Image (cartoon, rainbow, N blue to C red; front, side, top):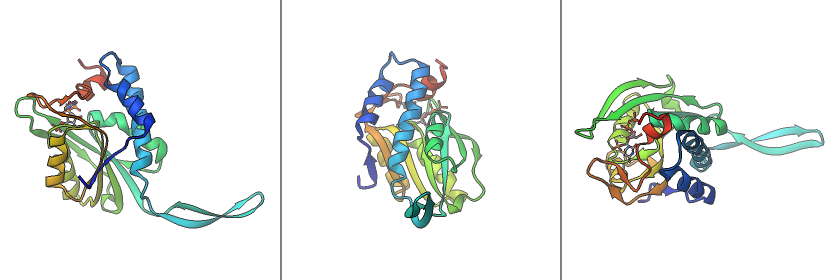
Length: 209
Ligand code: PRP
Ligand code: URA
């Protein structure tokens, strides 16, 4: 699992415990997903290239480093990925945001594409695809394929909870994509839900059930 990075920071693990809890309501759920995304973004961007800059302080010249020209794109998989965008943008305000609409057909569990709008300069950006859940992997595999078909090259996937099946599917289809997770759970149930997981992320974010 060399391209899988589990982020085990105590703040993330603490918030994951609350977000999983069946008693956590939509307001708190949204806030937690946002905060976890922000904390994960800190790790996911650890390899951003820096360049040396001289900064004039009130006391003299400081040798500093700033992010080099490389640009970042954040791509949520609709709907639930939307809950992770603001957390990312608070750390990376200059990032552009693309959207990919994919939902799982409840019968076949196969991904159905319904929307795609990406930044025009996607091939020049480091791209971070975000979605709280990686279950069968069908949605993420399809979303990453669309991005590559439109010229995206440097792609990372960032999820809160992954099932082993989803990780294996992404690794098989897109071995070049690094996967960042806060938790790897035990298995999928017969309906393709992650166990123990957190339930349906989209419904819990938007109160649709
Ligand atoms: C959820 C989740 C992922 C997908 C994961 O979305 O947000 O996109 O399922 O499952 P998979 O790995 O088996 O594809 P869902 O299809 O429920 O759509 P929604 O976000 O619109 O609710
Ligand atoms: N999608 C979700 O929102 N939750 C799961 O457990 C699996 C897919």
